Length: 165
Image (cartoon, rainbow, N blue to C red):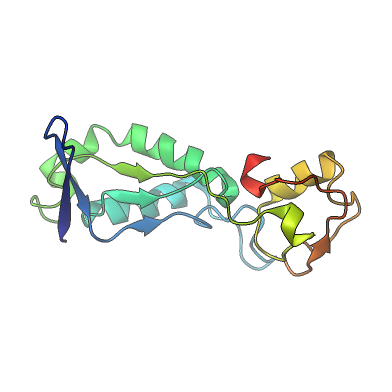
């Protein structure tokens, strides 16, 4: 695994981030599965994150808008692994993750402005967003098939970004 060193010019504190970043969107799925594919358990999500960390990935891409509350699940996993990641025997090779830290790359995430789109694109959102839009009267309470159908949002106020809801 290769690492990139980034230093704070003010205090010269440096951190080493893996060049390979693990994305976490859809790791927890939250309703994005079919009847024949069960949603992954929290244990499964943690096992996938463990394996990535064991191979030296120490930078994880996450955001509050990612489905399944994965940012919260990632935070819980990271807290539970604080002691393990300090130990050489956690890793496939002791030289991996030289900082012995797990980093989260989180962001606000403004994937689309609903007011300018005038519609909610199919498959670009979580059930939590759908529920909130219905609760606020922006999306029709009877809207179905939100994973495959684009729905009009005629009553959305200007400047309504999905991640603000």
